[in-house]
Length: 225
Image 1: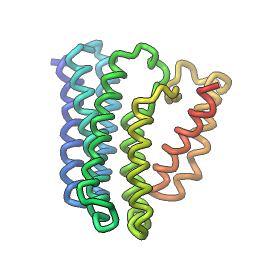
Image 2 (image 1 turned 180 degrees about the vertical axis):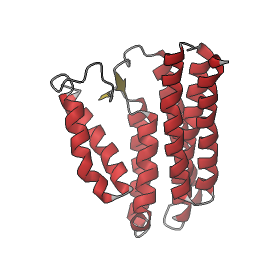
Image 3 (image 1 turned 45 degrees about the vertical axis):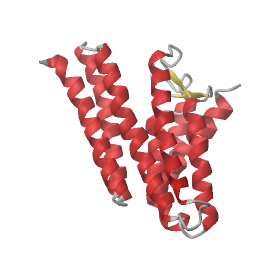
Image 4 (image 1 turned 90 degrees about the vertical axis):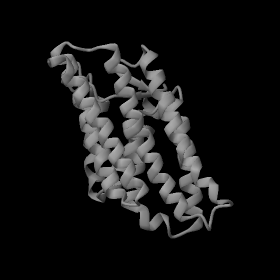
């Protein structure tokens, strides 16, 4: 019985992603973001439960990647698509909004690389898909009204999405919030990051996007030396 628990949690992640995608297409981005967050919680606990129960399996690994691409690839792509579709009058052609789904494809590629890359035990190579999804969901929910105020901002979101696609599959090392020990000296960067994130939360939902952006910047300047 216990061998089915991690896969059940993973399926809850996948279902959360499907619900998030539905609400994204409906234009209700805040609920879509809520279910992306719920999916992230399930994603955290499925791996933990598999390790605690000692029931990790190849099928669980593949199922996890599939669920992650729905929740952290397809769902945020749908939010960006709905945003760009609203700005169709500003874009050079209406079909440009469909380019948002490139991010779902690059998320799938990033997840496939992660499954095969043995360098990512205590860190990441490229932007993790949950962080990317939270960035776009929080940005468009928290700053959506402002982003629709100018035609130039639609272009900024479009090109920002392309940059995200690059970051997902890039060879840029990024630190992970994983702790072998709790000492400050060994985890100085992680503790400093967590402390510096506290004031960013004062910005509300969009503060989550600021935190992810800060994470990327900090990784670039500390992990590539």
